[in-house]
Length: 290
Image (cartoon, rainbow, N blue to C red):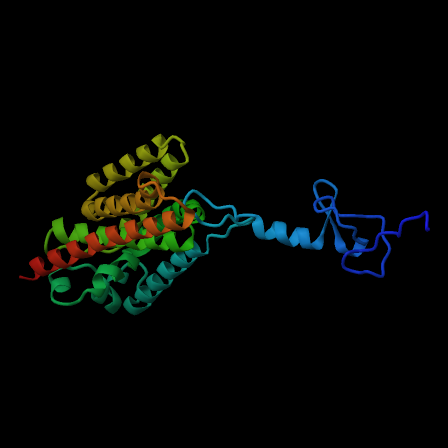
């Protein structure tokens, strides 16, 4: 009878004698099959299993948290606005009088023409700007507000909120602005991001006072200065606020049972806001065409 029990061998390599083992499952393993863990060392199978069990960290909106998030959508929107401005300036032969360009005439939000089938104006006007100062102010606001909004909401939800806000601004301008007025600019979408950031702060249980003061100041400027479309600002603010609230609060109010159902409810809420804005655009556009 052998008084010494056989030496343990690696559970993956039976020809390798080892005195080491996995601190999670207890199986003997050679150094090649072990990985350093927070406590002891784990075999490769346990490491793989644990990796599959770890749930990805997400923001309050359900977007995956990245180590070094880059707001690529915000940068893309800024680049698109600048490119369209450069095109209008080239067509007009002037940086300051770029509204004389053909693209500006085709895309600016002129209510009577929208109702006669030129629906591209509803979206295109949000990427036009009257001169470099108008562009600079809006792009700076987009950069400041867009970075944090995109990181919290995630890229797809963020671009959805941005576009819904843009449409909300166009809807309000079509419904309430003077019939013969011509509107252009990303301000409606920017005000939507103001509303989005306010909702995000509330969801994170942080004070929204500074954001509310900033919104009030900007609305006061909209009322005080001539040539600024207050209705487009208010419409964008309402649409962006409603869409973001649908993402961050409606799933909780409806007691969503899982992350997937919460994200689905959020998307449905955004879709509902989009449908309302589109209905207003169609109704107002057709009325202005009469």
